[in-house]
Length: 462
Image (cartoon, rainbow, N blue to C red; front, side, top):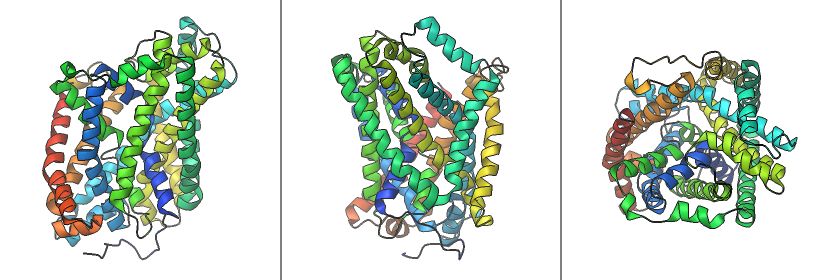
């Protein structure tokens, strides 16, 4: 079938070129998780063994599912909510599938509400680096800086607000004037800074130790837990179930190859993850810092290394600018997909919708802000064993990232593999090879649902 289900007669904006769309999906895929989560997971789970399984999972599982998501957006030419509803009705299925779109779009608003805390930290640290406030800093000093930001709800709330204000400002300007212009600058800048940091790490730090840490192939590390971690990261890194790619796919220009674009995106996302490890861990090993810390590595340990090295202020500024850019590039998609359905209900009101949702996101996000100070001992779901010991920020993070998004991804796979007719799905993706189309369909219909089900079950046993 070549006709796409439409939601409205209003002409829909499109990206100005396939290259800009590629920047958008790379920007949506590359986030803070690429910079901290992938490198330390690789190092703690067998290095090269983990990376091999991760790359296989990206190619065999994650990319085919992201192709499906973009293709649904391209076919629907609407928000995830409307695209799911219209395509399901066209296939003679229940319009209740639109609730998958609602889950995708509104979960992103909740994720953005606490993700902005990390974005605010990165912006504050970039400014501190530029001011030289982190020069020759010791352990007590770096803890004092971090705690001074978090202990004061007004200070942390201000940086949280600034990050959301910038996100809202860009999204409010629409596709052409906002998102497109931002991605044209953010994605190349992110890659340039990252490569510059790798070069400096190779010159000034212990690069060989980082290579050994990340790429040493140790078959004895192979375990079910490690495989599950690698597969989970393959889905997490490309934003499975987030709806961002589906929303961006609805703006793709005619003639855009979904399989080619998503293959490039998967390669770029993996490249960034690997290069991030080579940019970060040479400093970790050169200054004998702990490796498995996640965000704490950025704000509590790396400043020690940057403060002790030549040109440390510049390197620190570049690094935290990189973190900020990666966080911002992801946050734009989160807010865009959150307002996408309401842009259809109230066309021409993008500015107001972005502002209203931005304010709502900030208000919800105050719960995460307060979880570092006045509500730090509040565990909202402590009666559930899975959430015992998790504050508001951590509960949001775990529930949305480890449960909601994988479930959304599972439902997308079921929809494309079982609800859509094969020929319909094939036409949406634009496969020219019948053999490749059959392989894609088998993966999405069988392998992805089984794998995501294991990831979801694994999250309940963590």
